[in-house]
Image (cartoon, rainbow, N blue to C red; front, side, top):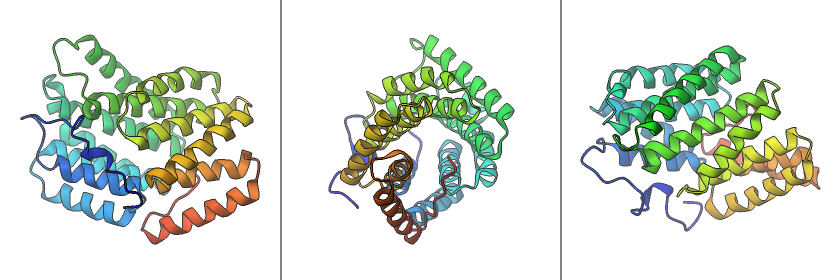
Length: 279
């Protein structure tokens, strides 16, 4: 581990413990933690094995969408579509059962992942449609909160936050800077209750990008600097690279930030997680 802190998934105060929790979810969560710390090769190996060996389609779906996110982080948005599509296919039927919050979460993960993939290949029409579909499903589920288990962080808050992230990114990528404000604010509200430091830091980084897009470079640089410090504390090397990459463009000492970004990129490459500035 890069830090003495516990992995985000091991906090028993929020980790869901119920008879409906799919087999293999602990393995999936551990792989997510490896990826969050930049151990890309180890994370992919664990996800590959899980997708191959699990008998629960919900767990397999989560493994595929998480693998897609690692591929996307390295700039492989077109390739990531394959895994995100498989993630959706595996739970397409089960997600219709409103009592199965895990299938629903896996379904939303796949849809949001496909929307993010579309941004990277310039397919904004597909991204818009996928985000709208996921948004309708999330709104409908929120409206039925008394009938379904909506409220667990990992199966509800987490996927709502990911949806808000990609909505914000869609607005920025498509040139609709004012349109990024509402989903950014929604993401910040959702992240306020997040038990995962990675989700909090990523939300802040996206907020910094929105500030920069609106011309408020001082605020953006301040947020990015705070994110860099948080990443050092928590061992979140991929997000640390993202923060210093931003600072290399808008920070008070671009040359120093660029050197830190290069160092972070080299460390990530050594762990099997090559990075690219593509979002």
